Length: 348
Image 1 (cartoon, rainbow, N blue to C red):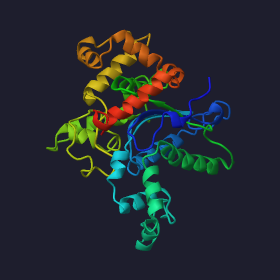
Image 2: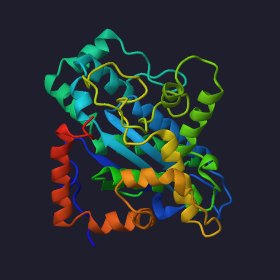
Image 3: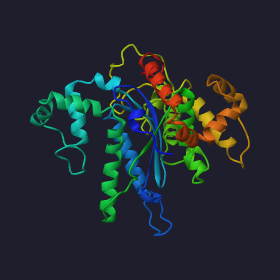
Image 4: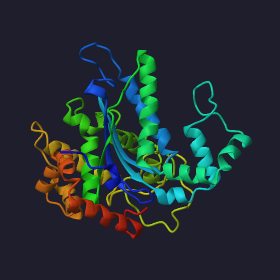
């Protein structure tokens, strides 16, 4: 079945949520241990995580979840053109400079731009308008994520050519249940691949990062509320919060510099999401048939989903969205979601 043209599902200027997947060329273990050459490339997974964290503070894109595997990458993102619209021209110029600096420090980080260098960017109104559009664009986000990793890996291997497959895959997520199922699917990837026994031991995943901050918040003696310390923690402070809180009065209010916005993504707390994640992982593993039914019933009811349908959705998540994304009724649902996003609960 031919892939759906991205123009049919991705629209500039509209808030959308996507599950993005990109694989290493020939699906080899270029970010893990190569079974044939016996080389270990696991350190490249940290490159990808660091790049994601950097881009979260530059782009108008919320990162809801991620998992860096040995030969592929999962990212759940929400584009935020509404946030980018509120940035000043100077903000746009500085962010663009950080993406494509003409000078770098010794540690390869972007050097501080001079006044003249920023003015050169600002002197083109059409250029600023285009850069503002790109800073909320999914394709530009993926370009700025994958291209530097490919170049660095090729320099390390002293080779040329493709590191990633030619096209990344983007699946639109149309409602909260789809977002929750996708985040669970992504966070449980190491468990499904038998490289980790539980979410807390799943390296390079959003779930593990959030649990590290949750643990530090609980043992901290600071007076700041635990919820605030967890969502702004050292490891996951660049990720979008889990809990979708009240609608802010002004989406342009000052935000943390580590992410595009402070808006959550699910109508559940972090603890409830972790319980849901643990329950889902146990149900789909034959050697662990137990369930945490008492705690999870309210969550499943809130998602308007029975246990059986939830498990079926998570188990067959990739297949369902891959085969249905191009159907007319699904494309119509995307249009409906776009209208809902302008005024609804996912809009900011």
